Length: 70
Image (cartoon, rainbow, N blue to C red; front, side, top):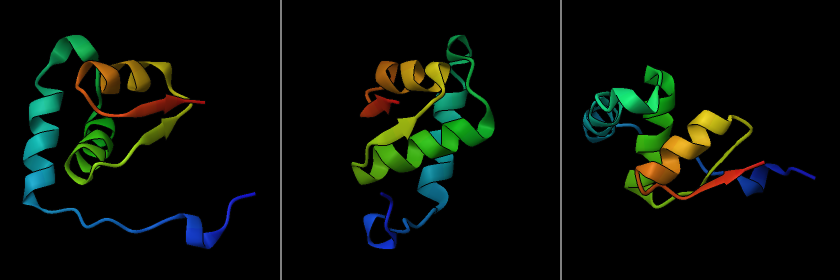
């Protein structure tokens, strides 16, 4: 069961946008801009990305971002 207290809002700053751009520049990963930003936020805040998207999960692992493929 998902609960509201299971989530926290993380700020998105210029740092996350720069990190996302660096991730997106790795064209072999096939990341879209939004996916890159999600990974950047997780990377910069030490969060784990939970996803159903195999490509996103594999890209996260390749970039050193903790990911869980659901």
